Length: 342
Ligand code: 13P
Image 1 (cartoon, helix red, strand yellow):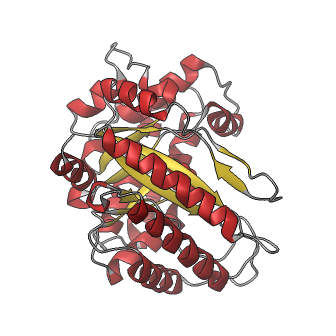
Image 2 (tube, rainbow, N blue to C red; image 1 turned 45 degrees about the horizontal axis):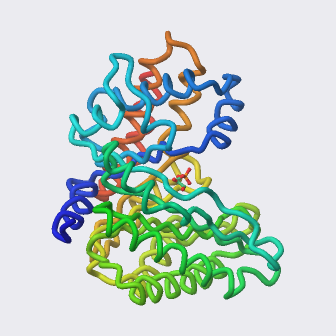
């Protein structure tokens, strides 16, 4: 393992305004997505859907890395090429989700701690052989009455740092994802405060465990009001509070910050990312979206082979819009032109 290689991998993923496609939905999560379009979640349907995304011509102009799930990294495209190999051949870095999910945090009702450290060294070794060059671990921080507690924030930061160290030992770039959920009815100020506490604990743990920050990527939430909040902040406010928060808490040598979409609509996630980049910071500010890159594509597909082309067009459009947002060059009119041409 070389530190330069880790840095190069991290830098490559976010070079040229590219971002990440998070296609690492666990079997449970992809079932929910398929339920929403009336498609049965069989292994073959999951493979066919990922095949559609990964074989989209031109996606590599916008997508620098794809996060896979354990099942997906063992699957192959229609022509038999393993997915990781297919992506790498297009210059897209294959990644892998390695946590085993957020589980109830003992003695702290309503909070979770992410698990998956046991056996992780051996799993990372196998994933690297299967082609993975970066990994993801998602910690979940919930806002509510009296939560998050410091205990929860610290348990999750500790796990993220142990995971990150194991990844670097294996020559794999860790994406550290401390997601503050936007599902409650809290104000943007509360999200700002909780995001700050979370990032302080995360970087303290990463430093304590000797993780080399140049060989990591950060996947944070935007600073945003909870979905149920009656007072939703403007795009400009989300952008300025997000950039300010990150500038206070994230060391400038981190090679990239890739936001999660967290339940924002496709266009909202793009618009906010664009406004964030119009302010800018010392790091590339890009995306690692799941739902905000796939929602239209999933609906357009609907499980029908005849709709593959339309679904690929929808996915490519979102990827292009988000890369324009990374450059700060997205305009709402670009969405309307495409809607009109359909
Ligand atoms: P969303 O963009 O749908 O929030 O998913 C990103 C992700 O990978 C969460 O871990």
